[in-house]
Image (cartoon, rainbow, N blue to C red; front, side, top):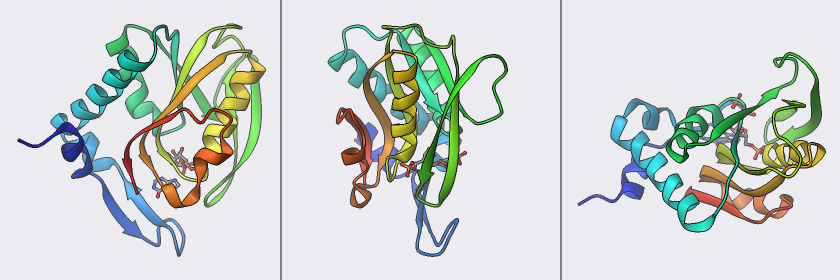
Length: 177
Ligand code: PRP
Ligand code: HPA
């Protein structure tokens, strides 16, 4: 029968020249639309965490598509979820960092009290491209003195060498292109 990984793979599609010419955009919307595929994603992430990490305090998700998977995984693990958002969206005291994207520039932000010093976190997003976004997230966690155990993504775009940019080379991906 079909493996969970095959099920996930079958629910990712590619759009050429989106959002700019030359970018082959990997679209995860079909995963969200299919209950079994979404369950498979969370199952695979959960297995990875249980097999590789003894203690995780929080799952930290990236705006916006990290929010689709992060809370589901956190709930499975019985732990909390923290949001890293694009600048200007979070109330109260925040820390922020700017970063480059495959197709633009952005600024990421987290609430100052979101993670306590010394807490162990796993970062989650839908996709690793240049690594700019996850690098920025690592910088934010450093500012809060959190310990980043690793990063988890549904998709890794290998040719962009995003892993090399990250401080932690502990990146787990379900599907690679
Ligand atoms: C995309 C994607 C990742 C990031 C990956 O998000 O969801 O977060 O880019 O690229 P990188 O590895 O080169 O940094 P995007 O910034 O387009 O924002 P969105 O989730 O709000 O659509
Ligand atoms: N797909 C989805 N999000 C992205 C991509 C992509 O190919 N590249 C950078 N962010």
